[in-house]
Structures are given as C-alpha cells and as structure tokens.
Image (tube, rainbow, N blue to C red; front, side, top):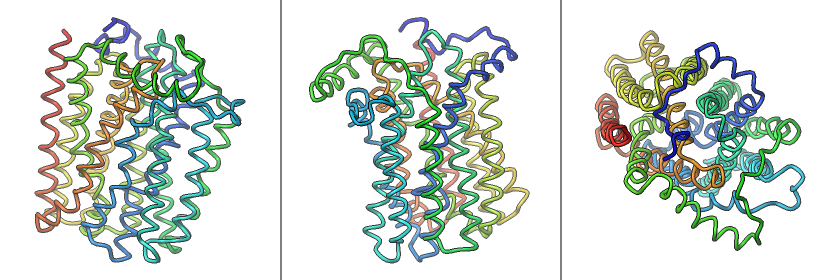
Length: 436
C-alpha cells in the first residue's frame, strides 16, 4: 500500500484549517447526493413502510422478511463495473456519472408513484415487486453517487476525504430523517397511499440540481475507450486485480471480513425499530419528533465533528470508538424495552444513537474510500459497500423472525445486537496491528 492511501497516517491540519475546507463547493454537492442516497430508504425501509404494513395487519415476521427488497444493496457489486464502463449516448452531454444518477432518479419517481397507487392491501405481490424495483435503482444510484464522490476529489486531496465522508453521511441522514418525519406527520392526516405520492414528488428537486448545478468529475488517468461489451468484461477483471494487487491478499481479505461484520448489530436494530417503538407505546408523532427530527439533527452535527476530528485521531481509532458506542446504544434500547414508553429515556437513546450513527458511518465511509482506486471507483466501492450491506440486508431480514422466536422479548433482542459488534472489532484490531 502506498503511503498516500494509508488511513493510519494522520493529517497535521489544525481544527480551524480542517473546517476551512468546507468552503469547497464540491463538498456541498456531495451533501446533496447524500440526501438522494438516503431518501429511498424512507420508501422501502425505516419506520414509514414498517408502520404502514403493521397498520395493514402484517406480522412482525412478514415485515422483517420484506427486508429482502434491500437485496440489491448486497449484490449491486455484480453490475457495479458497468457504471465505470457503460455510457448513455443520449445523455452524453451531462457526463457518465451524472447520467447514471439521473436515470436512476427518474425510475425511483415512477416506481414510488406505482407503490402509492397499488398499496400493500390491494396486491402485496405487486407492491413488493415495486419495492424491489425501488431497491434496485436506489442501489444502482448509490454506485453512481459513490463513484462521483470518490472521483470528484483528486488523489492528492487526501485531507478532503473525511469531510467528503461527513457530507455524504450528513446528506444521507437529511434525506432519510427529515422527510421521514414529515411523511409520518402526514400519515396522521391522510392515507398512506397519498403519503407515498408526496414521497415520489420529493425526488424531483434533487434530479433538477443534478442536471443543472453539478459538474462532471474529470476522467481518471488510465481510462481506455473500447466497445461497451469489451469494456465491461475487462472492467470486472481489472477491478478485482487492482484491489488485491495494491493491498496484498492478507490485508485485502481482512478488510473484506471487517466490512461484512461491522454494521450487523446496527442493522438488526434499524430493521425493526419502527415496530419496536409502536409496540412499546410511543405515538407516531413522538416517533417522528424524537427518532427522526432530533436524532437526524444530532447525526448531522456529529457527522461534521467526526469529519473534523478524524484527521487527528485516525480512522482506526474512530472505528473502534464507534463500535463500542454502537453496542452501548443498543443496550439503551433494551432499557426502554424493560421500562416502557418513557420520553426522557427515549430522548437519551435517540441522541446516543444519532451520535453513534454519525461517527460510525463517517469513519466507515472514509475507511472504504481510502482503499478504492479512482480508475475503478464504482466497481471497487460498490463491491465493498455491497459486502457491508450484506449483513444489513440478508441477516437483518430475519430480525422480525428473531423477535418472534424470542417471544417478543425486545430487551433480549437488543442485548444480542450489542454482542454482535464484537467480532468486527477483533478483526479491526488485527488489521491495525498488521499495518504497523
């Protein structure tokens, strides 16, 4: 590994110098793209869909199993190299990265409107297929967004990577948290079908910004023009060869194992948290205010703090601290399960969860970014992010089944999710030691 991409090397920028980096307009474009990345999770995940399904009479097991719609986030590495290779000729004027983003956003608008028209009670199979489509285009959009974020920052601008990760994280939570709270408020005033119609239209302003305000990143050195079908085949091979060649087999395999394990405990929490809140006794208004507005605000603030502090602490220390914090946060939810709907405890839990989510995500995104080549940005980041999402989607899809098997014992469920963090931290320590 070259020194310039070693995440254990700490920057010597002062805190003030780090904050001054925020003047770079590219970081604010990354913020908007983070919003676009987080927003589809409202449509097929989080509290909105789970509460809608619960109100329609679906069981916790069925709600948890509907997490299969997130499978695309786990397997999008299969088509990730195509985003580095394939160009839309009819959108060539806006560039490769932006054209992929725009196509995905158009598809998301149409599919969300279709979900609004259909609804789960009318035809659950058709509804689920539309949700799968949202997951597919959202996962593909993420590939294009991550490739844009990575390539818009030059390899010699290492100091911008933590803030790029912070902006991506803040934007994601802006897209996931604030609109989710708004839609939950709306659900108290209108049917969920109309709420999802509003949700579809909220994607349009972001697409307009991508079309008219964004600039296309420079083409990375080493890019070769070929026929698209030849390029795709070569891209698959070169993406893997480059990653293992630059890092070595042992470090590369250790990185893959850590990335798979790190977010599993948090994913089990996230899949069922909306159901948990309602079953404990919180109202939808309280859920919107505490778990969306307050938690999102905390997450955004501390994402910037994490971006500013990471160059001083180093990414390994940040990841280890975040892992410990994730375990503690899940134990706080176990406390709520034992005591009931106490608003003070709810506030403490969502504040802690917001801090933990921001620090862990910023560190995790920066960690992966450090190991990705600009030339194969979509393919390599897509593969690593897919691996990280594997635990969050495939395993966490059984979270509802686990709660049912535990007899609805939410406290024990959250204790188990806390313990799930430990294997990832052990692997992280081994990676840190091997890189000394």
